[in-house]
Length: 545
Image (cartoon, rainbow, N blue to C red):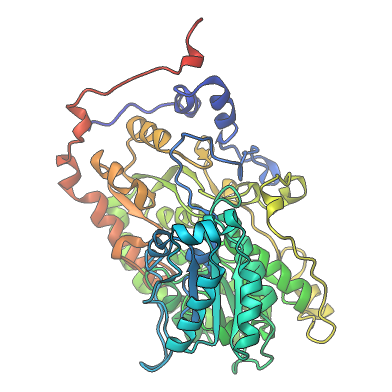
C-alpha cells in the first residue's frame, strides 16, 4: 500500500465518525480529541469509561476478564474456579502469557490449570450453587490449596447464584482454607475496568493484612499493577535486587498468597498500571499508612527515573549511590543497542490502543529510538488516565460505576503506621508527588489524536489515512492490521517476545521493533479486500424521508 498524504488531525477526527448516524457521531466525537497541552499540563477533556455503543466492534474486554484474567490470573497459588460456562473459563486460561517462577519444582503452581464448574442448561434453570460446592470440594481434594477464588460469569448474576454465601459455607467446612468470591459478572460495568475494581476490593478485604510477618531485607517495596507478561516482573525483580531494594510483593505477577497477605508490612507501594490497581493503593494508604506513587519500568530512561524516585523516597545516600551505579552499568549496553536501532527507526510512526497505562508507557520507549506516536488511546481508561489525577474531583460517577461496591476504609487501630516522619516530608517537599499520575495526554505531542475505546471501523480509517509504521493493540486487531501490510505488535501478550520492562527489556524491545518495521515482507502483503468489491450501505435514519 502506498503512503497516503499527511492529513490534518481535524480532518481525520471528522472522517473517523463520518459513517456513523448523527447521534452516534456526536457521542464518539467526545471520545476523539486532538491533543493540546496548555499551562500546568492542562489538556482537552476526553469522554471515557462510558458504554460502548451497541453494534460497534469494540476492543474492550468484560468485567470477568478484568478480575480473573488481569488481576488474579498471574497469581500462582490461589486456586481459581470460574463459576459459569466452560467457554469463559477456557478463554481466560493462559491467554496473556503471564509467567511465574516457583522457588522449587515442588512449590505450588496452579497457573497451568483451568478450573470451571462448566454450567449446563440444568444449572441455568435450577441454579448452580450445588455444582459449585461440589467443584470446590473436588478441587480441595485434588490440590489442597491455601486459598480459593470463585469468579462469577454472566449467567451466575442472571440466575442469582450467591457465590459469597457458598464461599462462607465452604470456608466453615474447611477451616484453614481462605475461600472468597468475586461478583465480576461480565456485564458489570462498561469494560474490564469494573473487574479490576471488584478484584481489588476482595483482595483487600479478604487477603491483605492477614499475616503480620514482614519479609526480610531493607527498603521493602510492593509493586502494584505488574502482571509479569513475558517475564517483565523477573527483569524488574533483577533490577531491584541489584540496587538493594526488597520486592516484598508484586500484585500480581509471579506472586504468592503469603506475599499478598503480608503486603501491609512494606514501606512503600509503587504503581505500574494505574487503572487496574489504583483502588488497592488508595485503600492500603488509608488503612495501613503506606504511601504510593506512580512508576514506569517500560523504557530505559523511564526505568532509571523510577529507580531514582524510589531511592529519593528513602533518602539513604548509600541506596541512591547504588541506584546510580546500577543505572550507569545497565545503560552502557542499552545505549549501544539503542543508537544502532535508532539509526534505522528514527522518524517512523506508531499508533497504540491498549490497556490502562500501556498506551502511555510504550510511548517513552518508542521515543528512545526516535519514533513518534501519532495516535493513542485506552480500552478501559477513565478520564484521569488521560488527563491526570487532577481531574478526579470533576469526574462524574456514572450508573455503571455505582454497581461496584465502594468500600469505606479507615485507619487500622493496630496496624496503621505512618511511614513518613515530618523530617521526611520536609526533605521530599511538594515537588515529590505522591498519589499522582500526570496522565497520558500531557506527554503526547500537540496535534496528535487521542481516542478512547477505539473500534474496528475507526482503526481501519486510521490505518488507511495515516499508514503508521507499526500498530500496537491486542489479538483481536492483530490479523486485520497485518492484512493491511502493517506490522502489528501485541502489547497484551507480546506475541512470544519480551520481557520488555527494565533495561534488558528495553534492549529486547528495540531489537523486536527494528526487526518488525524494517523487514521488506510487509510490502509484499496484499489485503484480500483490495481486489474484492466492498459492500456499502447507509443507515435508514440518515436517509431523507
